[in-house]
Amino acid sequence: MDSSSSFQNKVVLITGAARGIGKATAIEFAKKNAHVIAVSRTKDDLLELQKQYPNNIEVWAFDITGDEFYAKMESLDRLDICINNAGVNRPKFIEDVDDATLDLMLDLNVRATFRTSKFAVKLMKKNNQGVIINVTSQMGHVGSPKRTVYCLTKHAIEGLTKALAVEVASSNIRVCSIAPTFADTPMTKPMFENEEFKNFVYGMIPLKKLVDVQDIVDGILYLSSPQAKMITGTSLLIDGGWTAH
Image (cartoon, rainbow, N blue to C red; front, side, top):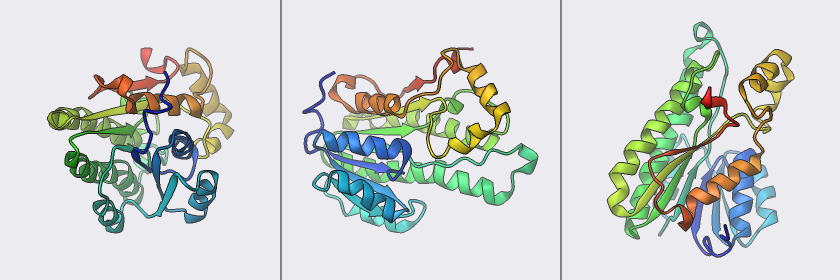
């Protein structure tokens, strides 16, 4: 797929853009001459990212669970692509899940994604076009031990993806999700220091390897591109066969 010109001057907002999947996605869109709005709480990481493509990356240091971020979104004249990537996981057995953990994950994984999508739709309707991509997980399609809250939040976003896609289709706005298996990112690295967990994960993936972050980025670029103009309300699983069991 030649998307070298597909994203020229497109305004792309990415949450959780300072590290991992979000950072890699921001770099790829910037390479393709999009105007990237990189959002994260960690300003220093954002400024390091911006140095790579200073003419193409704008940084917003916000906590997306707060109102300031949405006020800033409202100030935009347009938005072409919104990547809801920010998220958190705190693996615990259900009896060990305290209210603070539950609230943290619901607020960031669900409420903030919903609110970001709401403001994105308002902006996209101005130009009668747009794409929203929700970064979910294979855990939005299956269940797993110590993932009751995480699966809850990711299943919720898969539902949001479907419902919103139907609701905004008449405004020429597409909504998709991308659902990877475990990738080697700063968020997952500590998990794989546990040999039992590592063996469990590799045992569940028929292809016997973790997803490369670039695989996820390539999927996001495809879903955001004109080549995917008839794809909406669905989830692209990049899971090495996990959910085929």
